[in-house]
Length: 344
Image (cartoon, rainbow, N blue to C red; front, side):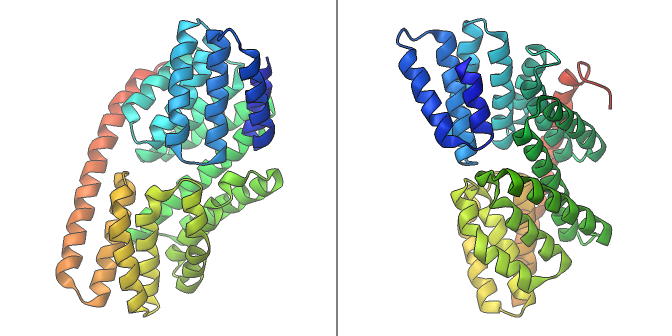
């Protein structure tokens, strides 16, 4: 089917070719066949996903492909759309709905439908990492990579490496905020990010390129390489936002403020502190909020505002409490899918 070939173009960042194919399919679909319409919607959602990492642009297409695929009784399409929709829901922080669609992705796919299974396992790995089960996350990420390898899907292999790097870097940043980061954690995060960079550079997938420098900036922050971290943040925050990651800017400005305060650039730290607070309204994930508040508390402490430092510490604790409640709900939701999965 032309839609499947066009999906391959989109996943490998041949966006122009994928758009041409999508337009050709729309022109062909003069009778508005529900099945073909759903495949086109899925294709357009994948194109939007790889054009920009802004989840809101692609989620609506995945929802419609998922619903129409069921009506059209196309099991393969419905399963693949469910996997992509679970990805969107995970990014949006709706873990309960994400797990519900993961169940459908597994039920509506067969073992050799590698794109569906690979993406579903990758999302599942992300959930396990988020609830601090690193062993399960590693196991399911390996299964995702296995499916990607079997199908020769380099784009999915690239995404798996990126996710592994993101998990390692996020754990390092959380540990650094808690004062328990280790040289080994720094080494592991650095290796993961380097591996992701090497494959992505070889493939030339543009939408992920801004993520590597930001991950390196956060690793440099954990290492106490304040000047290097500030330089990376300065050079790449804008492109990171353009790639759809505006929701993380509150945290990133707080990270940069912390670096500047350690460089005794208190005026710069104060400015970034204010930027962070202004941008924090877009930060929806409690783990990112906790990091942001922790860094802001440290900056306020450095500039001598003890009252605001304590306020930010309290907000960090509240974010961690809310995160714990979300994680408990996610563990409960996962029980509905675990019995159908390979054993960890």
